[in-house]
Amino acid sequence: MARLVFLHETPFEYLGVLVLSGYLKEKGHDIEVFVASEEGKHFWDKVREYKPDWVGFSSIASIHHECYRLAKAAKKELDGIGTIFGGPYVSYYPDCIKREEVDVIIRGEGEEALLDFLNAHDEGEDYSSIPNLWTKKNGAVISNPVRPLESNLDKYPVPDRDIYYKYNYLRKTQFKYFMTGRDCPYNCYFCFNQEFRKLYGLKSYPMRRHSADRVMDELHLCKEKYPLQKVCFNDDIFPINKAWLNEFLPRYKKEIGIPYSCNIHTNMVNDDVAQLLGQSGCDHVMLGLEAGNPRVRREILGKKFSNEQFYKAADTLHKYGVRIKTYNMMGCPTETLDEALETMELNSRAKVEYPWCGLFHPLPGTRSEQIAREKGLIKESFTLEDSKGSVFLESHLDQPDIKKIQRAHKVFYFGARNHRLIPLIRKLVQFRLGYVYNIIFLMTYLIRYMRETGNSFFNTFLMGIKNIKNF
Ligand code: SF4
Image (cartoon, rainbow, N blue to C red):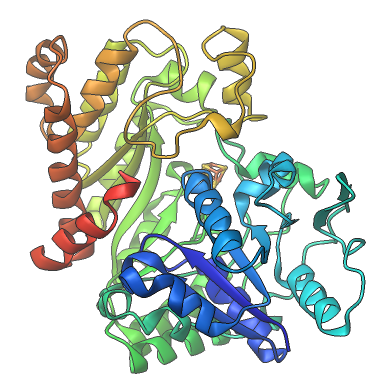
């Protein structure tokens, strides 16, 4: 059977790889992962010893350069081996197939396409007409449409965590990710979600979910086999189906009983939902606030709720003992420094416990990116290839105040935890302090991460060192 190895540089367990590995192994294929930071100088020896038929990459927009680097190196180290790319990045940016180091891409959900591809490999058959798959022949790109979305998620077995947990660092992480379903009903202007839906020609998503039994099986297995002190349900929006929650959460509380976190939308928070979450052991929820200024949030980012709604949601969650992590962006198209500072203020006044912040990076094709283009804030030729990856370093926009906003982003945590510091921050960002800002950002990022995940200082420090390339 075909041997496929996934490679990446930094230690992070990609849920997509776990799911693919579980499914493809069940179908008899041989799947492996090697992480460069964990293997050290023996990395390529290990990959060679495994004798892969293909090298795979699960690519998102922030790590695509890392994937390209590894794919180039793999071709050199493994005698021109074939490379196959999946993940949101290639769904979104299929032009990457034109690159020399990319041989095959799989757009959309990859389980069935990758299975067909590996089966074709085993049979020595032509794979160029497999739905979802793009490849090249004699220099010409061959593209195939996507197949319909799989409606029965329980078809896929429990994700194969063993594939990553041979690495101590990943196995010992107390905070582990789970997905109970796929799809999101919202239409934020900056998000990949709208493009993914277009790819499938859908006006709305079917909102697919695993059965409660299947999710419980996965949780039990993980709890029995590995250290697990916090569960993160990483579905785009977790409390989407009240009947499902009413079945699942009481069982979760009784049988698993580990504090958990989940994504929720501000518009969904009410007493019923907050109480259900609080009573079932929800430690904190993740809310996409994105921008504190109502104009930026609504018109540029497509987040349709007011400041008052956000305050009310925060109060309701706190009333039931549920803490809050927010996702925020600074440097949004047309955003001024004062508007960016409002994001700190809203977080602080709503008493958000774990405020996270990146810089706005335009995803080509999204409405937010179109706005940036129309206003002349990004160069016409901009593509995802130009994106430098990390959303923590610098903005791609050319607009007034952007340098000051970049500096404000580095000290975001202070203002978001205490709005009384904002006047001081407004003065501070007038000064160029070079790497001092980056060091402050890294320290505050780790403090927030440690508080949010409950990881020890040592593990958090280790996480920072191992992932330094991603900052
Ligand atoms: S709620 Fe989250 S996943 Fe859904 S469209 Fe908005 S940003 Fe994307």
